Image 1: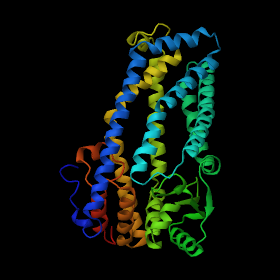
Image 2: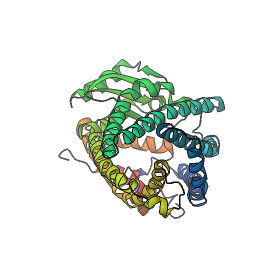
Image 3: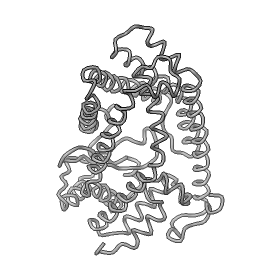
Length: 388
């Protein structure tokens, strides 16, 4: 950013100016610096917990309570999740009320933040409680085959959550109201009907109650979809641009990107759980980390710690696949809407509204970016032709 941050890309000449780029650079600098500090702190806490003897002490304390296997595991993981959440509270507050405030994004009040925080704690407790309790019951009931039953249960639970989330969980945090512009709704339904996507309803979400960031997404499982438009997006984009954004989202559904990601995730999870089963059958982790009472719960924590390290080299592969899906969705959107100019103008507005980094380092983008960098994406869309 120091080298290129204030350079207006050729494809954006006349669309953005140096003053905007100054804000982008400042915002990205603040976010990156804060993210680095947060990451270092999180890793220090993790290292101290595991290598400083705290895991040993905590594990021994849980076992001293003489609770049943399932109740012990539930207490073990719930308390850990609460402590982890509390440790991150100062960082969440600073990010929301300092950085996001500074650049005009945050609209959330402290009472609303506290209300959201408490709701999240309750939801997390319920979901974690169900997953841990049922998972440990399976482990106890089927010592030899628990890994495959846990895999199946987690799969069914995740699909269930995808189904109920739009109707049960999302309304806990936001208000969804039908779009009043019936002409826009008719245009959306007509466009998506061309590719056999049935839209039951189009909703406006009160995103501006918390942030001025803009977005739109599909929700629902099966043939019937719900479309959610941020009220911030409705205020900044015209109809053609909104249609272009939704055409892109339709591309993800028609190219079965969600299904492909679910299948890939579940296949990988299947083998990971089998590997976890083999490792947890031994005392390898207890010996390696010098855990005095090698409980199943402590081993799971250690396995998760090692898994995070082992999975790091695979991040670029996951990011690359995600960027491939985004390019496919862009090509589909062009074939559906027939206008790359609307797509480009929508992306430019999204970039400006969210102060997106236009000059990410190529290596960082290749490693972490789930979307192609904005400038590359606009260039690719501009070069699309009807036979693409």
